[in-house]
Length: 412
Image (cartoon, rainbow, N blue to C red):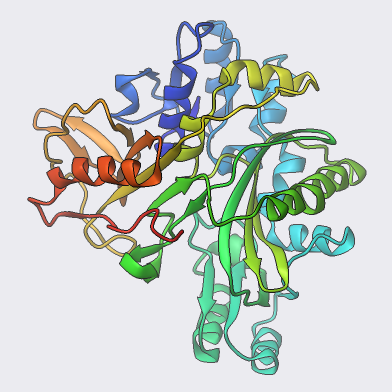
């Protein structure tokens, strides 16, 4: 497993359920992951060392968690050495690596998405903002660790974002081009699918909570929690997303000479006019992975092998609800301290704990990132899952070094 966050920890927990899996190694991993797998001190972009390790340890499969190694070509490098690896090539991972590429692809193949323009000239971008008005969305074209999107409610906010990206180079080369698109109002949801060429095998939808604080207030984050399934999303909308978004995009990538193999994440929004695409990611999303995978009944290795060989994995899911709430460092997504000791984490058969940013010291687990961990539960009803999660999280109420939203899963 390549990566070091909560998504990777959940993937490891899922892989460990397989009777076919004997050993899981994670590069570089984190303190919580080390409870469930062997962590290896190799950076996720050190392809030569990763390939040497895979050969030396006779690794059967490598699975890539984060986007950076994918867009840098880790799949190409492993395949060139005859190694099994699950994820899209560098050419296909551009679907996440360049928002301009992806918007143009959707426009060309009539996939529903917001109207947009791409700019490298700040003056022209500002003129466009004044012409369109607010609210409006400004996005850095390239990867920006989830921070390159500004949903501007005023023209001034949008202009500041453009100047920050194009003139102040706040995101370096990733912000050398900006995509400015129409603001879409509605309910967002995420839909994962295993993809191999033109074959698409969708999972169940999930919804994450982006804003830092309760009632969707505060700044955007990488996600403060998620839940699945979505009782307020009609089957017709899911079918539309599969038939008019996922399948056309998979076929489009083949036609463009960039066939996609791996997990494709569609960030979607249900508006009054219908379903639209907000973004695509070339891998599992975080924190939605932490609530979708616990509902998957299949053996994940069987799924990966079936998909890679062009066979239908026959995905099945539990008739249950999963909810996961993120515990974050005080100050996140702004400035925050690391190295803060976590309270003792109780053993609770009703909940699972997924580590995102932790380290192990003589004092126990300490924080090592903004999003520290996620507490999740799978229960027959949504209310039972919420009750279990929030009962567990009471152990964090005795400290103000961390915070969590108290309304995850209540949107529906």
